[in-house]
Image (cartoon, rainbow, N blue to C red; front, side, top):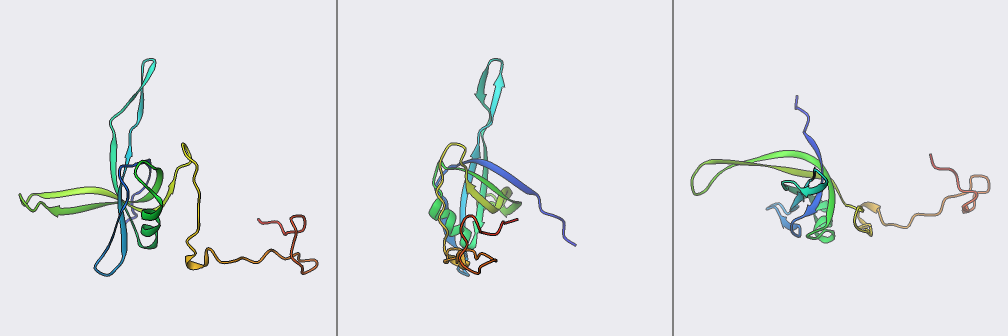
Length: 150
């Protein structure tokens, strides 16, 4: 039995353009860092708190979409699982580790910007969809006669 993953939602700005690379098996992966600086109230004024930098990565087709769509400074909201990378420092041999967010969903934030979305067309997402049919007549439905969507 496996234990559940730690799921995290992070909002912040990208510190650099996402870096797209490919594994030896040809699987795309995009890496980037999300930065967040909290605002703290001190008396009558707001000041910047200590910035938090969260390394993140996204895989497969979504990696290519992120690399093509997002840039340094873009505000994003990402959801994913926290993972820990462990390795030994090449120079000292000391053990090292870091937490990273393995992203399952990411989107540009509309808090301070307008966002335009275009489908990739993969998996049938961009194919032509026929208009709804009026069940009473069998003809193309109009706005008035289209069946209600639950």
